[in-house]
Length: 519
Image: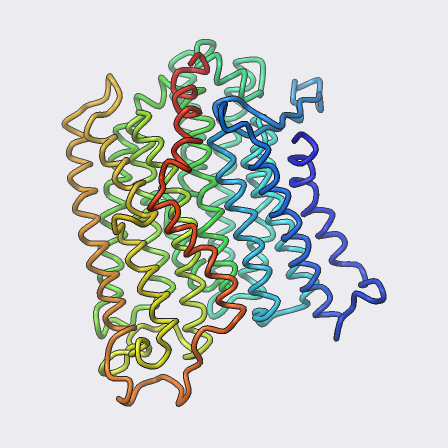
């Protein structure tokens, strides 16, 4: 187990270095480009297999205990250690990350985005995977910061070099926002480490903030929270996200929504809730307010984009939907209750699966039509995917109803539990305030259903014989698309019909985390 986790974190970096080398004879395939793309599929596939083996070897009877741990001294002067481990909170995120990277590599093998060398693309993809996997597995504050920052450069280049229109401006906006947030976050992490004498997240969580004064906790929550909120993204620090998603290549959007956004909310749960509980309790009502505003703001922005005549970009619409969905995650965290935090973690996984699938589907639509403009896609009577490409239309309709939180699918449980947590927040928090946030969140679910059903009506329905922007022969789902999308559909169904699979992992770990490591 210890070796497996270390291998999962090291393999992407080794694979990235190997991707830049010439392919050995016999593995070159038809061209060097095919060889490096095959290399990307192989490396991410091996990492996924190792993550599955780690999951099977995980002691599911003790998900609150950190397992597969490594703890060795690294920088003695600062008491920084290479401390690795996983529990019921981090394991699902680690597994989902490995899965999404494999599916993106598989998709890129057949549909590589236009841009420079495929070698650089695969190398950047693997470095990005290394950073995201490490974020969910490290248990030292400074290592967490290094992993958190490691993803910025590869994602910047994936957007700037392989993206679409306005890609340079979007890439700069992405990296400036996240870098500025990270600088503030580093100050907060240093404040905790220097005042407590350790950067070890397990020791700090067990101490539960007793070594930190209330003022120190307030400053730490404010500083770290800003950095995490930018990455989440929380309203009003979200403005980089729609531009980045609109400009990014399809796999870039999938990974941005499915993995990178989760790094911010994971930081709230792993660092701020157990290490600075007093500071979090002070700021929780404000976090809940921003979350509630984000839920409604994201939905209203999507409704505006979905309206006929507004020339709304479908990728941009889904990006704004992420602001709303991540608002439910933040609301669950703000309740500081086991119910709310479990809901937040469940919504994290559900959003990664469903929104990743949505971005895959929109990328496929853009490839076929040459645009993601909703008015152009729908034409005068509707794009009529049900008639022109029925399987593609069915996948899109499934992803839409999963995203709006239909009971029986993964999107339902996280949002419901977050709202239940807001109904009865932790002791010391204002119940009237959180009841207000719950009501606003409930309104957000109705608005979400509204804009997603409008999208389905405009894109999937209509007269297939009517004149539209569709090509004369619109291809239905290809074999590689089916292979990349089906696992996300299956897991969305599994999590929706059998939520205990995920909640059985997260709940004991959350109970222990909120109890300061004593339960």
